[in-house]
Amino acid sequence: MFVKELLKKYNGKTVVDGVSFELPKGKVISLIGPNGAGKSTVMGMISRLIAQDDGSVDFEGKDISKWKSRELARRLAILTQSNHVQMKLTVRELVAFGRFPYSGNRITDEDEEIIEKAIAYMELEEFEDRFIDELSGGQRQRAYIAMVIAQDTEYVLLDEPTNNLDIYHATNMMKIVRRLCDELGKTVILVLHEINYAAFYSDYICAFVDGKISKFGTVEEVMTKENLSEIYRVDFEILEIEGKPLSIYY
Image (tube, rainbow, N blue to C red; front, side, top):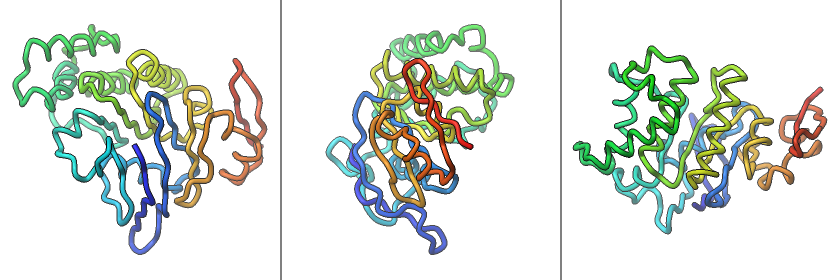
């Protein structure tokens, strides 16, 4: 996936300004930066949920705007911060939605097998007949990830997957993100506020400041005292845990 010169304005204000980068396949890429830096807007444009004012997203050799919705849904899955269930759905019914790009609204025996495997992968068997609004925040997030797994796409886009989760469930969610890449071979792109999650569970980091890319590279290349102090405009100290950089600011 190639992002080329993306531009987005709201009410005359430029919120994304000429952003270009290439997303490596089969890796976890975190978009980080201060509030209002343009991370979620870029995520929206590369998933086609937000129309860009200029620029393009080259997806598998074709502009993403040219893909038919059903064909795109077989290749790219996205979970946004605003994901919510409009109807009273059970976990199994929610996960079944992941098969609609393939099934034509008719769930086959093959679809049923994929749905069951996705539920089992997320360890939700005991909850599959419960309604989504009866679950805890962590369980609900796992149900949505199971839906994504059932959708069986190469690319998975997650906007703030740890939002509103305590540290225990947020850490478990990031371990799941890592498994999507390492065990299922998916390319995972996510927006994160917590830079230490980005450091521990990503391969690449794309850092935004004022609607532009400030730094893009491996975790080791981006997670330095100088870079983080420039991106967030506060002083940082970099420690190391389990061979990975850990940042604290003061």
